[in-house]
Amino acid sequence: MTTLDTAALRAALLAERHPDLVKRLALDAMVWTGEGSPTLAERRKRLPEFQSKNRRPIDRAFMHSIFERDHAGTADREVVDAFADEVLRLDDSVPTGTYVDMCGRLPVIDPLKITVPTMIMRGQYDGIAGFGDLLAFFEKLPNPDKQFAVMPGIAHASFQQKNYALVYHLLLSFFSQPEPIYRG
Image (cartoon, rainbow, N blue to C red; front, side, top):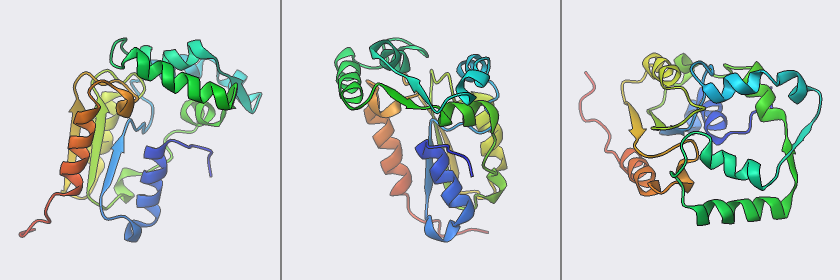
């Protein structure tokens, strides 16, 4: 088992391994193989460093980079500052496990084993979740009840973006969608 702790990958693993527990699955800012991700390509160059220690330091500049590395302006400065204040109030470092996993252990999920209705959500400017990577994942999903949504004006951290209402709209629509009457 890996230490991946992104919500999308944990949800996908649950759906893959226990489809009886999942009715519908929405994956936002997910990474499958990491192909086409400029951010992960840069991080891979530092993989030995990340593997050599359990934690990496964080500071205000790092917290701001989360919201600015893909496309500056997608999040309100006040939101970024509040987010940074609260995270840095709790800690000055974070585990390296997610960087190690995303740079050296992908893929960890098999789309062919995800049999539940699934929606893939990707921010227009997401520098981690490669567009082609997600399309290839989407194509392999066996359930015909699936959707792929590109969210305009959004980077990787969709819930903290100026256009967060689009995220909630997509989720509400997908999770309140009626069951098909005819399946063929």
